[in-house]
Length: 317
Length: 74
Image (cartoon, rainbow over all chains, first blue to last red; front, side, top):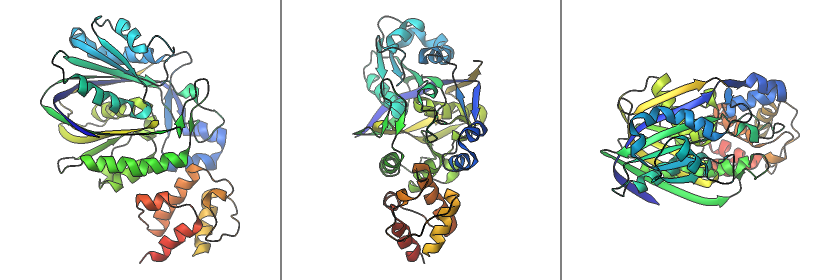
């Protein structure tokens, strides 16, 4: 389904990253030099950053959301919390965050469990809420602590995830946001209730190189100058960029530095580009998140790296 | 040509690769997994100058599937 929303603005994005690092050398020591070399070339991950045991996603969100709330706390009418690793089955973490973040009791608080497409699902949901004039701002927040939910003996998934928290503020402005979304139920990527992360690499690859480019191309216009992808796998991202007609420099990646940050992947890329790679001025981007569900959601969004407030910080674990 | 593919696979897998036929599925090779499979696609692009469509990547299941593309290359 394709939908366009008018009069929106991405006002701020903030990310926090723990300082505990695991490197490709650690991975090689565990699984051998040959496997590590192949993994490094294909997947592209050189290091990940992991939260200390016992860290909750809400802990990360509280740190990430803090810079965004000073000015707009009272005007947040909807809270969308994106996670697939809540620390409780109930109550919803969005409700807890209403209290932790000091938001009003009038707030609509929802949890969104949609994996690596979660941020994009939340952006589209925020756009829907802002259709109603009573909604002034939507706070999207979330992240995952996945590093403790992997099989340490599985070389394909043991070194994959960084645990990152994010927050993003969406309000009213002059921008049109055009979305395309897709859903195809599958357990090709799964996180069993009391088990570890599992992925059928072949099925996921086939889905990613067929459905995602098709969706991106449905949104591509001549003004689009960059493609910001969920950071899943360097080889796959290069293929998506190529299949969609983007030059490599139009498809920035930070998977080498941060691995796969799940739902925080795209907010982390935005903050990293703004804070650490000098992105300035206006761009017309296609953002694309894809993964568990299977879900794939892309959006053509005007970005302004001068007026949107981006914040990136590393915290001591 | 099939010998060239065998050499490429031996380098990727870092081991001797048994005799191949066009019918040999990549997933039956010792040490194969999904990361190996992407390595095969990546190395075939680099070594043979191939550019795959999405359908070709998805359909690349046997040695013969790669052979057909190599033989069709001008």
